[in-house]
Image 1 (cartoon, rainbow, N blue to C red):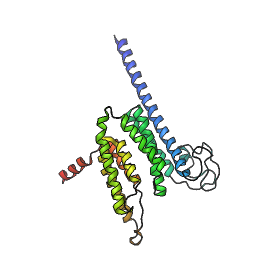
Image 2 (image 1 turned 90 degrees about the vertical axis):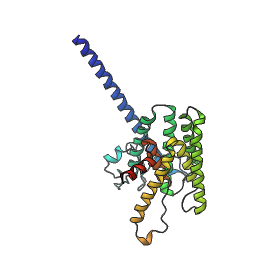
Image 3 (image 1 turned 180 degrees about the vertical axis):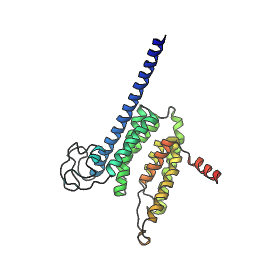
Image 4 (image 1 turned 135 degrees about the vertical axis):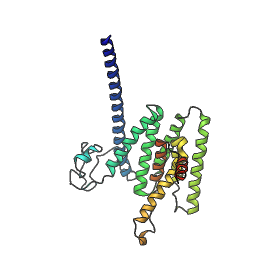
Amino acid sequence: MKNAVAHLRNGVLLFLGTMFAMQGILYAFFFVLGALMASFIGVVVARLYTGQSAVRGHSRCDVCGTSLSPYVLMPIFSYIVSGGRSRCCHTRITPTAPLGELVLGSLFVLSYVRIGITLELCAFLIALSLLAALVLYDAAHQILPPSLLALFVLASATKAWLSTPVFAELYPVLFMACGFAIFFAVLHGLSKGRAMGLADSPLVFGLALLGGSSALAGFLFSFWIGAGVGILLLAGTPRGSRMGIEVPFAPFLAAGFLLAYFTQWNPLVLIARIFSLG
């Protein structure tokens, strides 16, 4: 009897250990996949509309132009090993790239945890990668490339379709997405482009499709995050230099909608709790 119990206990422990190991491998896989995708996105964003191919040609050092080996291009790891400096000319490297790789890798893991291994996950990861490219390009150039924007909306619509078993259940999300898009377009027209870029309209449409039921929360979070960052920028800028400051809104939209999607927080409930504490 004791031997049977011991065998059963060892079998259970072995099973649990195997399950945990497999889960850890999947976490590592999706993190590495996200980090590699972020590294590739950085190349695409840097070469887009420059006449250079995003898939051909060697990556080069931005300072001295030396061709970079695959070892140097390993996400996150190469930055840590090199101490944040270029291996060819020892110039200090901005931490933007490894931070982006870390963020997208983490988001890929969260996406797997949230959705599971399904076709919906594939569509979501594609949309997430395109969103990262849009955010990086907007942050660098204050413009959203139409080609990437169209692909993002398509990927978001595919994800929304795959996540809805009955097409009729998609109507509320579509109405909300159209409402957000119209609001941004009207805001752009009334402000003559000073308050909002016209390309933010299709972007928020795609984000609403991607966020689904959390779209309204994402919409509110986006404006809260944008307002908070705007206040900090104004506070840290000399009074005479505040005019003409341009801040791209795409990063705030992405942050707000992703925050709402992954946390499922309801901002209206948060406001009610804050007032109840007061």
